[in-house]
Length: 304
Image (spheres, rainbow, N blue to C red):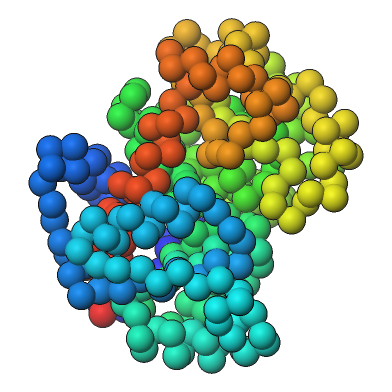
């Protein structure tokens, strides 16, 4: 049995994704009942952070602790990765000492090179190309609130970034229609769009994306590393605020998601973010914990 990695949603097939989501929901229920399960006893997760994060660190570290394991936090200051050691060498060494590795980095090629030389499963905890762990949480959240996303209409309003790319992969895996509203010049990667065929369309007006949608999602307009573009992006994304008025074009049962952190008054109104009849962002954030526990369990069980 080969070592399994999770660098994008496409690394699992639909049946495997369903298994992970179902297990995440089960683990969430067990946690609420105070029932513990410890499949990671004496196991160690190495957490390599080139990009900082609140939700990613807390969810992975807490998840390992809740399931009997432990986690090592490694920033660029703590490893030779930040001092020029070849990624391949770091992978060979680190994977001999820990049982799983998650990496939050800028370049997706860092993950691919690390995984190619790792003895243990490697998880993409965010790269500039994809954010698949967030999509696991988002899918879990939709399933909990509305059932399967298959055949639904999903609207992405904002930048064609790593989150948008992962929504495209989710459209491929779950066979839903994805409408992406973004300004000219901020489109997602065309090769990723093309891979989804007719499941994905790109429009310029947010109303055209949201009309009749079952699920609306957005993200900040300037991601980490793009701070110098903040002013330029504020101008480019004018009119892309997701608020109650925009949501009025969606289905009456539509829900809103945001991976957080949110800039209230920019990509989402404070009123919509706090409206728990529509916004499920707090469940979505919590589900990072449960989805990642289920993912780690799956990778452990299905690897050497």
